[in-house]
Length: 425
Image 1 (cartoon, one colour):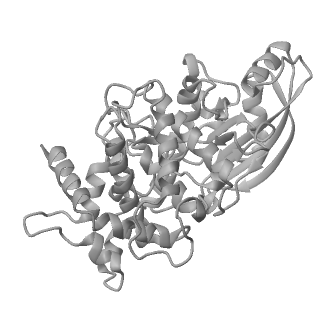
Image 2 (cartoon, helix red, strand yellow):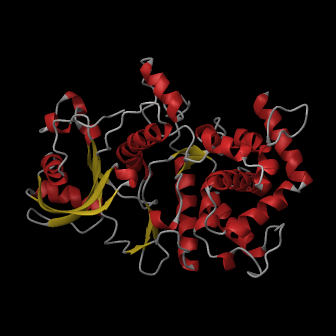
Image 3 (cartoon, helix red, strand yellow):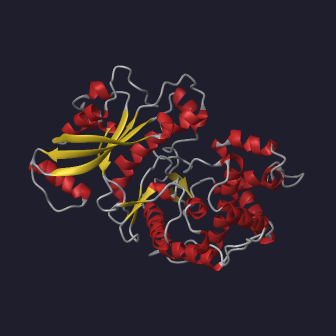
């Protein structure tokens, strides 16, 4: 994993200037927009000028604007990773963050160009992954060695509305987000490699693999997202010990004397990627604050791809529905939600919209509704396990009510048992 270069000033403007020079661009302004979580770097807005017609044409294509010439200016974004001093190499949280930034760089550099224009994502102009591209060193490499930085298109001119932190989206924005996710999941089916060797393992496993000299993990996460059980052992153990929580008994106790697994472990096993043809790339952190929309709200572009990787699309939906969908779009009555809440009309309509869009040009037999619904229910149980161990937010009553209803469904239990057994065979 990349480490901070003690000899580099880590000045965003200087770093941007070096990376822009690779493409015959000059920096006009650099403004800090926000710091990254836990002080791991910053995001800056850049205004740049093209010094050649070729550079202007290249940026015009990336930005999706009319062809420009030398002297034209463009808005870009710099994401600079400069973590705080850290003397605990075995800290899982630190490992996860550093790996996540590597994954995001890979996504923007290698995956986004293959997505095409159907999926609205910021295009990458330059990355520190390019330092030794084509066997030649880039100008300024000595100042950038050991740093992680990426310069990409600024989405805001085309998508000027930013989703608020922990806020509900409008009905139109929810539909736009579902359509984007369906396109992204569907498009990734054509991009998946044949094997699973090139994916990044959970933090401790990946760290061990690299220490042993195995550098295969240079792509996306093997398991997209940051809440799955394999990387949340500390939180899960806390939930196991929290006997005052109903979810301790409901999710953490062994299913039977014959089975060594708890419900949470069974659910995690079923959701873990294993090469099924219905698995896709998932965003991994779907929420209102990680998207921009058009002024009308119907066009959506997601960003923040630190936890993109393999998974079932239903896992992206579980977080979106809990954290960013208005409750009146999910239930028939907002007041006095039942302790056990079956799927209501609004929830089903949203899922059907996504499912129909997902299967465009595939046919309903590729991923049948009944199977998708079981995956959706299982993703909700898994998401509830994380929230119960971390802290609930969003449509809490809805989530808990839905999971109680799922756990009381004997048909879901039978399906889960069959699915676990098939994974073990």
